[in-house]
Amino acid sequence: MMQHSPVMIVLLPLTASLLCMLFSKLKRKLGAYIVIASIVAAFVNAVITLQRVMGSPDRVIHYAMGNWTPPIGIEFVLDPLNALLAVLVTFVAMVVSFYGLPFVKDEDWLHVGGYYTLFGLLTVGMSGMIITGDVFNLYVYLEVMSLSGYGLIALGGRQSNLAAFRYLLIGTIGASLYLLGVGYMYAMTGTLNMADMGRLAANYLNSPLFAMAVGCFVIGFGIKMALFPLHGWQPDAYTYAHPAAAGLIAGCMSKVPSYAMIRFLYYVFRVDNPVVTAVLNAIGVLGIAGMLLGSVMALAQRDFRRMLAYSSVAQIGYIAIGMAMGNMYGFVGSVLHIVNHAFMKCALFLVIGGVVHRFGEVNLFRLGGMHKKMPISSIAMTLAALSMVGLPPTAGFFSKWYLMLGAFNAQQYIYIFVLVVSSLLNAIYFFRIIEQMFVQQEASLTEVHPVTTRLGLPISMVIPIAVMGLGVLVLGFYSSDVVRIIMSGLPEVFVR
Amino acid sequence: MWEVINEFLQTKGIYSLVMILFFLGVYGMVFAKNYMKKLMAMNVMQVAVIYFYLCFAQKDGGIIPILNGATTDPNMYINPLPHGLMLTAIVVSLGTTGVALALLMRIKELYGSVEEVEVLRRASK
Image 1 (spheres, rainbow over the protein chains, first blue to last red):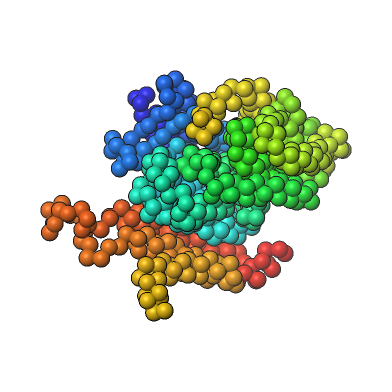
Image 2: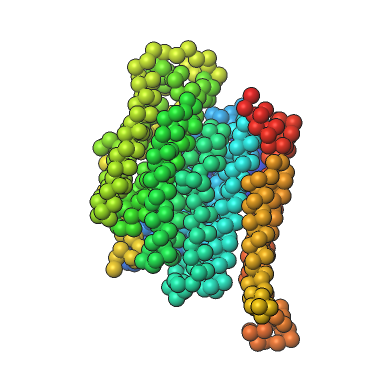
């Protein structure tokens, strides 16, 4: 049983979400419980897998699908990097799946089943993209993730259909470019296995096809991860997404393509050739532009969710510059920021989802006195906001610290300057909200879903918010352990 | 002169056509004013990628790879893998089109139009 733990991460939620509609028809909420149970099981399997990876001698597990040996067959390859991210994605999905229950409380079976089917498939797509070792398999999971993501965004209400449709158009360009890149690489190397491709691509580094393929991959993933000039779809999509799923969509859906970009640039194409170096420099410039413009745009927003969406553009910029530094600290900082930002952004979206659920309010200037109405949410939101700014005990500080170290080692002082400026802008727009929540007088809000308990929200929403808020602190305290895991799976370029 | 053109058409001609088709699709998605047309342009773009795979898998005088067929010489076989991959890609593009059409129907219901200008005008109200 233990040897099958990698495939169970994907297989269990996939089966459960495909059966979800059937069970929902039988009993309204049964399907939802089955999907939640399967995601919990996937999380357990991910943790087991991470333990097995760290325990195995060369820190890699290969799982050949149906015992077809790679490179002919499709394989799942787990090294510390993607085992860690699989744990992250399944954990966030698990927490957010509990959070969704109050939102679908009064809906009919079609909506409950539909929501949880899409939610389960989104989890499948993301964790599959992370653990697969086959480039075409990655495309399939990418599309599973995107299609269920479009569905979840479209469930959000009136304006969300338009946002989902536009995201669909732009996202399909990204996926098609990725497929085109896979075509170039396949025509060149004749293999679809990532490790094999990485080995064989070394012979073609000077070919124009190689440059073309790298360009296609970077633009394709750049669209999916909302790298700065390609982020046009993202504010609308995050703003109008289903409030229950926004935590997962905003927290992980753009991080997984950035992981895939890291995987391709650092593990498949390797960074020590001129094409990839040039691409990395371009990503660095885009990252800087994204950090500054994203932060400034976030400052100008009145809608809490839209502000968070623009702040995500800036945070993707952090990941991008970490990638672009091309040294070990930058790499560690980049991966650490993927983990930390998933927690922070998820916590913030869960809090605003709670406010939407109870009051139907998203204007950040009407959150006055929220600490009396929703104490735990306010504290979680404060922790996440402090982490976004990068104050020491919280997780955000450590990823910024590693990014700074990386910039210092690469002697790219412009990165340090931009990091500081962006953090200050973060401080401005987050302290504004903290001030609203704790200092300003109470805003008069009408309750859409009245709550009488002192917690301020239904219990299955308060616990996820509290877990995510505390998670930001816990990740900060244990960040040395996370870094140790990342360090044990560094790409070959840094090991030599 | 003609030789150069012939040479180009023989080696790269089909790929340049595929590239033109691809960017025609992207152009249509960016500049078309009607959401339905944008969706059709998206399909053109996806078909271009499928053509690309089929083009590089093509071989003059190649036969289908069957174990007990006319020959067992692997050099005569057409590589079946790109075709297999494209079957998956066709299914994916079908799924994408289905989701997009469903969304488009909802947009038409909500705003009474699929013209971009009209929809944006009514959405901002």
